Amino acid sequence: MNNELSTIVQLEVCANSVTSAIAAQDGGALRVELCENLSEGGTTPSYGQLLLARKNLHIKLFVLIRPRRGDFLYTDLEFEVMQADIRSCIEIGCDGIVIGILNADGTVDKPRCTELVRMAKQWGLGVTFHRAFDMCVDQYQALEDIIEIGCDRILTSGGKPTAIEGANVLTHLVEKAAGRISIMPGSGITENNVADLIHFTGVTEIHSSARISNPGKMQYKKDNLLMSDNFTDEYGVDVTSADRVRAILKAANGKNLK
Image (tube, rainbow, N blue to C red):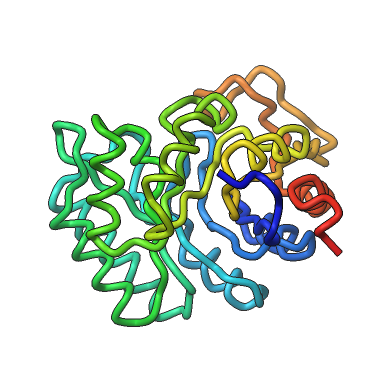
């Protein structure tokens, strides 16, 4: 593996809102993966988020197609929801979708995934297979299945909680992919670890939310009431930081970044 940086490493930002997507663009990201509910692993954003994102972005806009939190084994009705969401992405003019459907035995659901890829590709949309890949029983077989399906890239942490922990697997995936599909590391990537990850794996694109937490601006706060199951700041808002996007890109590319 040639670990020297010979090409510019591109950044896809996992944006949890239009506000985050615009910050990603301002920071120099190549592409955003627009979603909502990041605390639940991400779900499909609202139609309004899609419309406003497309209106405000000139960089590539990919959309997460995931109807709910939890596993990636979907009912027939949930599959219909995913198809309807893809049609909305096509109508709005998005550049791609991010999908992942598994069978109960931990293998890739090839027939359903193939149908979603077909829907997207016939209208010129790209397709990323998301971190459902990390939940597969055999990642190397899943790699071959996803290549056969026709996806453009796989978002993965190498089957570990973070991409840094999965660096060895990521390196092997890049080698086995052999240019047939892009392996895009994601999960826990920051400006502090991205250079080491790229040096070790040789990847050319990375995925990060580049988030910060902004305190809420409410003057009145009711501290004895929670609106969700998460024991977090009810008034704070997590958003992508343009400065963190720039910092990640600078660390990823070093002297190669102009």
